[in-house]
Each structure stands twice: as C-alpha cells, then as structure tokens.
Length: 231
Length: 111
Image (cartoon, rainbow over all chains, first blue to last red):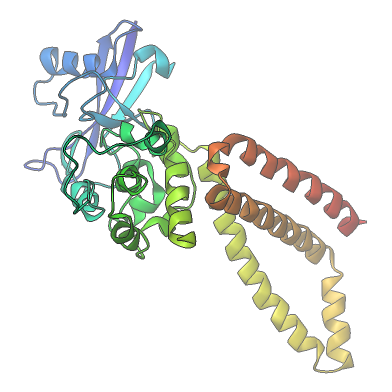
C-alpha cells in the first residue's frame, strides 16, 4: 500500500524552524513505523535522523509522536494507524536536537532527583533480602518502565513547565517507595511533595493512555499522592 | 498537535468552568453591592436579572457549576479512592450525571 509520511525535519545547522517534509512510500500493512523510517533513510533521504536501538520495544529509544499520539516507532504497525497519511514528529516538551532526536538530559536529571535505586544502609543478609509474593506484587506495575519518556512528553503539565518532575520519574519513585526492602521512601516523598512534584498531575491520563508498557501511571501517581497525604 | 482524549477534554473544561465561576463571583458581588444601595438600584438590578440574556447566562452558569462540581468529585476519586483504576467508567459517569442534573435544572430555570 502507498502511504505518505509527513515527517517533521529540523537541522540546527541550516534551519531556524522545524518544517514538514513528505515522503511517498510503498509499505506492507504489517510494517512497523520504524521499518518505514529506515526505508526512507536508506532509499530516499540519508540525512533523516532518529534514535533506535533494540527495535523491539525494550530499550525505549524510538519514542516519537505518530499521528498525534506518543508511541514507540518499533511497536506501531502501519495498519494500526488506519490512515494513508502518517505524521511523525518528535515528542513534545523537550528540545529538538535534530529531526526526531530530542534532548533527554533534563529528563534523566528529573529521574535522578527521585533516587531511582535501592536505599538501605543495613548490610544485606548472607543471602538475598527476602520478599513475599504480596510485597513484590505491590510495585509490580511500575517495574515495567523502560524510561522511553513517552508518558512525560504526553503530559500537558510537562509541556508548560519543564521543571515538572514528570510521570516517568514518579513511576520510578513508586517502584522503590513501595518496595519492602527499601528505606528511602521519606526522602523521595519529600522531593515529590515539592511544587514541581506530584501535585502538578491533573489526572489527564495522557501518560497512562500512551505508555507502551501499559503501566497505569496515573494510578501510581495517585498512590504517591496518598502516601504523601496519609503517612 | 497532540490528539485530544477524554481526560484532556475534561481537564480543559474543568479549568474553563473554574475561570468562568471566578468571573461570575465578581459579577455576583457587584450585583449584591448595587442592590444594597437603595430601592431604585434594587429594582434596576432585579430587572436586569430578568432579561432573556441573563436567563441564558444563568443556564450557562448552572452548566459550569454542575460540571465543575461533578468533575471535581471525579478528580477526588481518581486521586484518593483508587478511581484511576477505572478512568473510563468514571469519565462517562461524570458526563452522564452532569448531563442529567443540568437538563433537569435548566428546565426549571427556563420555565
């Protein structure tokens, strides 16, 4: 089938503003958007720039806005979009470095703020730290995060305020705060209770709708709000 | 442009109705102030309130209050009562409850 790809292009060395370019491509319905982008790069325009690594929905490198919704290019099939024009743009709210490549540095700085690692000063027992099935279940949903940035860059609160810590960092905070082996909940909750913390979440659900790992991000944030309010 | 979904629409409507209610309060306080000035001013303000324009505005006001109130309850449920596990039913419930109460109230306001 013939599909028109409208791709947002930006070269910082020659362009002052991003612009749209059209590419006609013959694709199979079961082709992924990533396949199509690679095809464009190989056969039409070698300067088209985008990130990808594993190409199987695990590394989270190829997050982009495809037909108005944040998705992973490697997980989105042409047939899923039910359109003969496919618009591909960089994810919103981050600086665009080139074409579909955005600057993730502030994103990872926000992630670091919530200390996404085990905090426990006690020496581990001679073998592993024990955890019951129920205790592990408590934070199971948020262990699935691949830090692709789709949730944070789908959030209107983040678009208007880059200082907002953002859903991805909240998900990773949740993963450790509710881990029975961790003892850093209080210091993380203090960060989350900041003016740029969880209270800027207005339960819009763009993050939950877009998450390629189907994490209920809004529910995780609600649990953090509860933890701040009632502990 | 990011595609609009249900949650985003209700967030924008919540903000718009909130701003609308603040504007209403200013008009309302001004009205109360004018009424207290004397019988002449009292009659003037009441006559203005009875014009068709104000009737229509009153119905808009009622819509804004109902949506803001019901959606506010939805947000509380989302944040503090595990409502985020059921976003779609809650969203539909918000629109349906708002719609029913609004239609019933608007009928009485108009007649």
